[in-house]
Length: 462
Ligand code: PHE
Ligand code: NA
Image: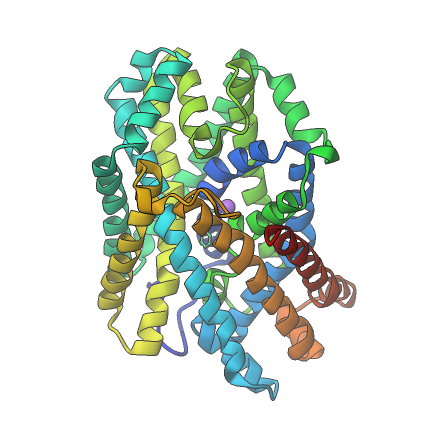
């Protein structure tokens, strides 16, 4: 019944491969796809960034996901213990458990800004249903003003973020039951259908040609080494890697499930949603003279412009932001689970206490992100090379430093520390498929991450 448990050794299993794929897809598909991917693509010049991102998903993201799921399934416990168990099985130090600890920290930091942005989506449900979006009737200035009014008002930001974290804590404290599985089963396909409709509408009414060429004709002169690091970091972020999640979910994998196949399905679903979000947003961006580099507000400005001109726009806008909220919520649950499970395992907290404690800590830290947008002086860092406020720096440290480094360690651990025959057998891979996997985690992934990482860090220290 319980999808997640915190026993040192878990006995729960997903009811089917399909249930696992849905839950993992629910964790993967979130604000990263619909909100973050479109705007960082815009900030990094489009096509070349998209290409590097797709290569990172294929050659690094999928193998690292397989490695993480393998560790969870093999260890059958929460991340730190799972890694320690596998290390011991292979006659190595249990200190490798730090990989799990790093993931927990990353997940905790990510969640602190995630709930703020998810809060915007919730706010937009009410703005849409209340008629604000339709009333603006597609006027870009008016829509922009709506967004600015929301993000500069700390009271509203705190209210919405609090709502999101309280909801997350409540569901998690109760245990993630079949109810959630059912919501995800219903709403994920619905999100997909709605994105298709919005994409078609954007194609017809907006500048689809400009969007397609922006996204798919790479101009490498527009790509910086920092852009490459962002593409790499986002590949981890969007697949929910290096944050313990895939290990936890892997721990409940039924014996016969194929780690390789399920990882590929999840990555495809996640990638398709991200590309569709781009193809829904950019035709409107180009048709309305919005800057592709508009930043975090892009989703909340461009689509509402289209909604304001659509027949039944208010309804469609409401439905759309409900779905963004659901997508964000299923990811937030996964993120908080990572921290809660750690407190249960390491500190012996009860499950509901752990959820409340970690939720409160996340809430407190979210004030930094809120202050960043609301203009609180202490959260503005004009001088930092990582970003101009607390939110940007936090986003940079998590997505561009902690997640890729976590991926590096996971690759090295599964590629070099765990015995190859054990990995091959545990994953049930044929020789050829295993060779490909092995090449990635031993060489491609660690070398690529190290090279990109060191170059970008070198640039930063100038
Ligand atoms: N993958 C989620 C998204 O794209 C974010 C996330 C990161 C969720 C890490 C869980 C763990 O929105
Ligand atoms: Na994602």
